[in-house]
Image 1 (cartoon, one colour):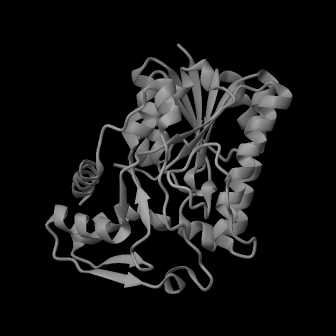
Image 2 (cartoon, one colour):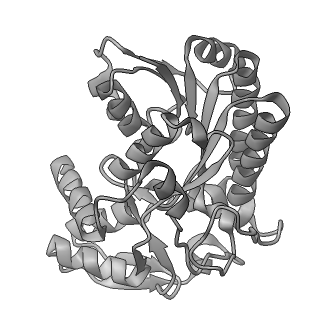
Length: 322
């Protein structure tokens, strides 16, 4: 069975992916600097005979090169994540995403190792063509608005990956993830569902930024992991870009009120202007809805959990931590 290196493997998605690959019989190695990941996410895997981990950054190229050399393929999840982190630390965002990805691709190319690059729905930017298709034009905001540094850095990651594929014959797959949620996701850095659930369980107000009418689509982490595993196993995915998401759309205000109802909370829903939350000049995407026709045609991908089931799974997980 193949061996897989997961960068950012102690993170929310990475730890779930590690579990799934081990269950399939893979050997899994993880590198993570714990900047947004946590040892608690992989502690239960430490004694597994086919699991290993290294606590380091992917910019330590001596370690990265050795790990890539020992693996058959790489799933590159390590990245700066979350709107708050992006706004607060744009230099870290750009350096982590671009330099880290370039290092992964360069060392993978030396050995011809398959790389699955996790990108983001953020790259669609201000596009108003709904739903988003993988070959759509991408519309980013001004470089003077730090909000778009994450989208731009991840888009550059995509360009790098496709360039390595076309120019250097590196087998590459790009997956654009749409708001993956589930157990183990931190509420830090603006992750909305765990942030809302934790507030509701405490009886605290749920803080909705802006007017709450912006819409998002949320994908259960188990569905995202199933899609990633499916792409890894499909040779026709190489050189292609795929949306991974759940097209069920909800406004952020409606999301907050559903979480209040499903937790049985007495929490209020309050509205915070963007400028108060993120500083002057913040811009947001009004809608973010994926077309999943391309990945469905390739691997028959179909989300299994609807929004209420996703929220209930997060509520259950958060209650276990109390």
